[in-house]
Image (cartoon, rainbow, N blue to C red; front, side, top):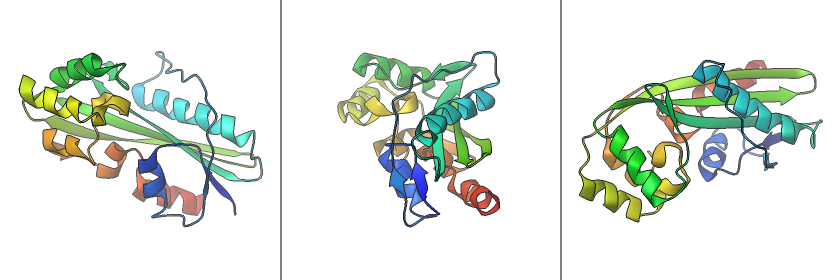
Length: 183
């Protein structure tokens, strides 16, 4: 069986290697549309499906795995920051608060399509302006949803996690492993 990961995320590639030794990576740039009519978990599953379908068209003989992650608090979605100022704004808003990290996954092969998502709750420590500035100065938050990466320096911002750590990294590998066995 040929597997394709439809993600250029190094974190997702690293995590998928824990399940599948040999897979290829292919990405098609798609305009990600988060449907505001859907609940957030279903909307992020839909984004993952959009990414997966774009790659599946190029590899109809493979099993395609795609994923997308969002950070949300009080109905507001925190995507990747536009710049350092946007990253600082996001981090200040998340400071001292709980937020949801939702990763949606899509599996595609032949005539089958399955989507699922996992939500984890994260509580940030109360952050000073100096802490926010120092973290943004690392450049780590600039390409991450919610302007932080739990696997890096962003771990220093977190007070508590309720849920699956790997969902926060971008790929819920335990559930993905189970779903792949039955797919």
